[in-house]
Image (cartoon, rainbow, N blue to C red):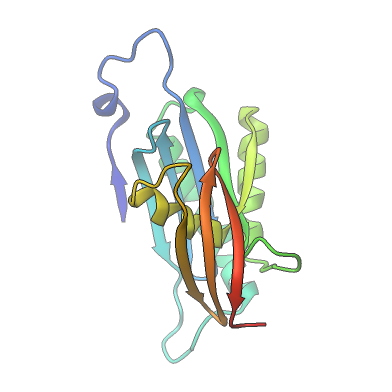
Length: 184
């Protein structure tokens, strides 16, 4: 499903200063996601679609997920970037791995990283890498209106991993303190 606020409706009288926009990409094992937000964090346009798991199967192999992401993402990005002024995009954020710990790796994230790297090079803008888990925590903290002084207990249950994390945003970077991990 594509949610869209036309650029002209969102910024009916674009002044002499250009608005700052940011592209985000996440290619987790079961969903291809991309969005454009403004500097206030307002989602202008997004696309997030679950990957197809064949009936009777319990999931996808990494190679299957990577293949689906790699085939879907170019069309999604084209759709999103066709709805905004790409000259206003200042940076790209992309999930590069499941968790921000050594050895955390899933090939499906390479589809998003590769797309982000190509777009960043073409637009000559920076690319910032985050973990999928940090994206979950950032979304929760943002929706709760947490400030840089706030700390939040965050429970993350995903796949074979269960963690309780103490999170606090600091300069838009999320610092992690993992004090219990059920998978280790």
